[in-house]
Length: 101
Image (cartoon, rainbow, N blue to C red; front, side):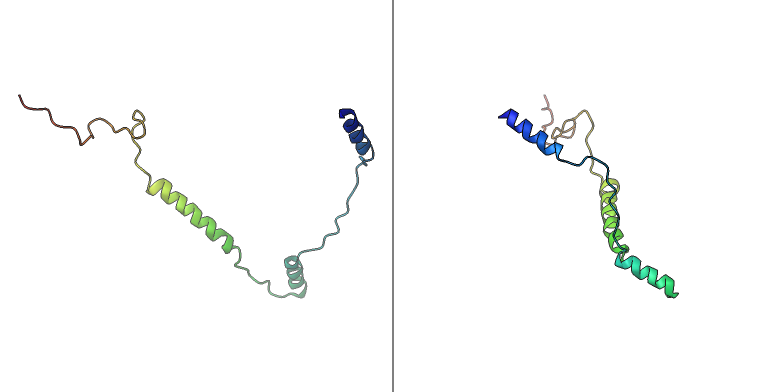
């Protein structure tokens, strides 16, 4: 069975064209580029587009939220010697004071 698969793969690969081929680029300009070229050729005033801000505003919000969490509301971490859930010594409020003799 393996020999049949190997022979079939060899026959299929032998039929492939392996020489380099130049593929021509027959794409045209986008609508925005055609509009810009038309405005330049006719001497019209090139219109200003504020659409770029629709991409930058969400990025700005994400950066500000991260900065707020990271630098302003940074959680208080215990010392490296204490494990998570273990309280440092001297902060346990359930301890009774030593009894007087």
